[in-house]
Length: 299
Image 1 (tube, rainbow, N blue to C red):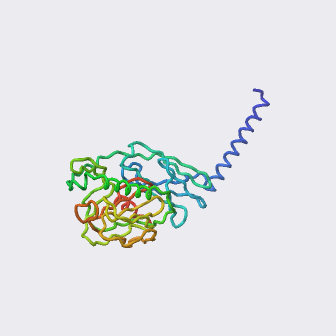
Image 2: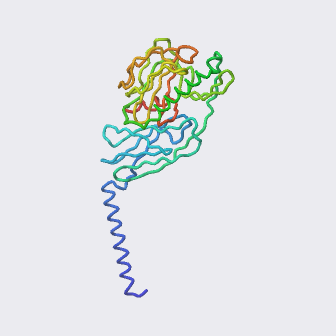
Image 3: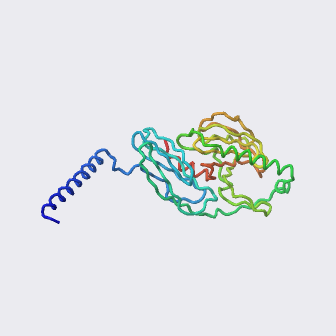
């Protein structure tokens, strides 16, 4: 390289460096070098059937779009519109491994990806003995059960509505847990599906409260679940109340958090008065008591 060329090359390098340095300082002043969107999880690892509370902080004017397990996760804004929150959920059948979580801020387009790990768990089993006619179903009853299962499936698989729930979820009644979440059922020595909710002890007539704001999307009297209420809280969250003695709401009713929707009973396939309480988050069967626990810090 000639002696004449060296200063030119050096000046060019210096000029490029100066431009990059100026841009970097300008970005720092504007806050554009901050790590947005900011992601906070109640846990980066969860067991199958457990929800995870997700908080996302974005810049003024942005909103988060969250994708996990190939589904969009509905988010609710906080008071300042900068921090949003929602729930991730791993169904009982979720394969244990890491799953990528993608959070994109719109319209800025800033994006972040992290891994959320899911671990397996053996929830144990329960053995029940019931009258044969409640287990070995005759053809008409079997057809009824299939129809009722399809009715519930269609309700739970509707496209998520806008979030109606706000703040902490509450227990529908105060009874102790007599049937924990996730246990496999062996009924009359025949294996059945794992318990997708919790059974809460209660005397017949005990009030059952809506766990958050929502809309009643199903009231019914089914063979297995008896008199039942399903509430859509929006944002892909549904709560279910089974074996009720009385139902006090109608389909399409809007209910408030804590509003009494029915009374504890023993209708359907039940061995005594109790409430079967279940929650689905984005279609996933999750432990409803964990959802309640995680939500307590929300305003």
